Each structure stands twice: as structure tokens, then as C-alpha cells.
Amino acid sequence: MGAELVTQIPSMGSIYAKAVTTLGRKPKDPVLPETVLVYQSAMADPAKLSEFRRAVGAPMNGVLPSLYVHTLAFPLAMSLMLRPDFPLPLLGMIHLSNSVRVDEPLKEDEAFDIEVKSENLRAHDKGATCDLVVLIVVNGQNRMELRSTFLAKGVKLRGEEPVKKAHEAFAAPLRTASWKLDAGTGRRWAAISGDYNPIHLSGLSAKALGMPRAIAHGIYLAARALSGIEPSSGSYEWNIEFKTPVVLPASVDLAFDAQPDGYRVQAWNARKGKPHFDLGLKRN
Image (cartoon, rainbow, N blue to C red; front, side):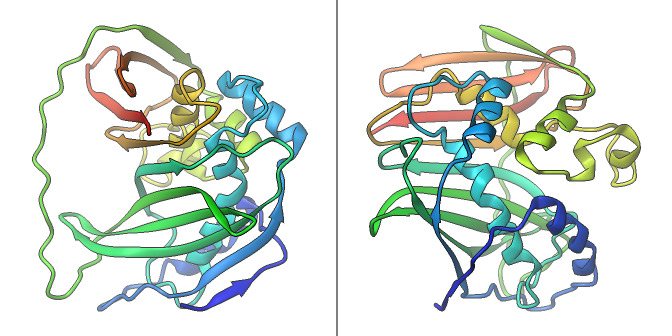
């Protein structure tokens, strides 16, 4: 597996501007590249960190929220998908889930290296999925792993049968919180995170990509759910599975269920009773 040192993290805007060039990718026997991109001595931007905290209600506790680290590092991971040797089309990829392991939270003024790679290409009943993995390293020690799973619809893997996931009936739990998200939620988060995917920005741009209206960013939803429960020290892990998009404007009901070793957070459509996401956090 070859490591390639990069000197600049690209903007998400520049990535989406080039993403259209990947639409022609129609792999017959896709193979993920073994390249690992490495960016050294990254640091938090104090102004961007303050904006992130205000947007999701994250506490000022001296450490970096894991999803702030994600927003800083993820453009580098996305740039891996633009490379000619990455076989799947970037546009149209569907974000299915995130899982994060934190060995010890990063301090606000701590420098860290970012390593990104792709792995786990596997069959799905609607196509093929793969993971983009971001590893955060300080002085040679792994401190955080952020894994995002994406679906490329219509891609077939030769000789591999997809594992069909059983559909679970959803029964709304007791509501403990609710969010009111207006039509501008996606545009405001794009300004903070740099994620200007058109499906989040307006009804017109979202409809052009097959959505009924603009939808909320999954990372925004996860960051807001984590804002009051993410530990400020020690080892922990969390994962989120996205069920149905939050179509803006929206009313979202939530249940925060405190458990002996962490939390479970469920979110659902307040009117239709359909689940939006299921998040679990566990302290180690």
C-alpha cells in the first residue's frame, strides 16, 4: 500500500466542480486503489471551530468534536475518489453510515496528521458499497478513526452475492427532544462545513438530482445529536446509520436514551413516523 504525501487539503467546492468528470465510470470488475493520502501537521481553525460549535450546540470544553475533525479532513478523503484509479462515480454516491473510534480526543491546539484510504468494496442489494477511512495520528500514535460508508447504485461485483438486510419495522420511542429545521439549514451548514453538494442547497438544485426538496446534511444531524453526549476525555466509539433523508423544512422528533456505557439516539419524521437515523455511542 503506497503512501502519497500531499501539501494541501482541497476545498469541497473544488471537489464537486470536478465530480462531474467521474460520471462516465462504469466499472465491470472494480478494484479500489491501495493509495494512502497523507497530510501532515493539520490544526483546527479557531474561527471555523467556533462556527461549528454554534451551529450544533457543541460545548466549549477544550477538545475537538469528532465531527469537526471529520469536516476538516474529509475533503482529502473525497479527493481520493476523484483520482483516475478510483473506479466508482463520485456523483450519485449515497451516504449510508458513519462509524468513529476515538482513543483520546484531540485538544484544540494539538497538531495531527491525516491519513485517508478506501477499503471494503462489497456487494449490496442496490449496487456496491465501499468505506472511506480517515485516520488521525499524533506523534505516531493513532488517536481517531473515522469511517464513512457509501453506496454506488447499479455497480455489480462479479462472483459476490449481496447480503440482504432484513427490514426492521420502526416503532417510535418516547420523544425526549425535537428540532425545527428551516429551508436554509443546508445552506448554512454548507458555509460552515464546505460541503456544497447541490442536494442540500435548494429545492431546484436538489430536484435536478432526484430529490423532492433540499435535504439536511447527515453530518450536521449527527454532530447536533452528539453535541450534548460526546465525551471530552477517554476512549469511546459511536456509529450512525441513516434511514431516510430529512427533507427541508422539517420537524424531527428524537429520543435520547442514556445507557450504562453511553447513549442511543433515534430520530424520526414527526408527522410520518418514519426513521431518519439511529445513533449509538459507547464509552470504552
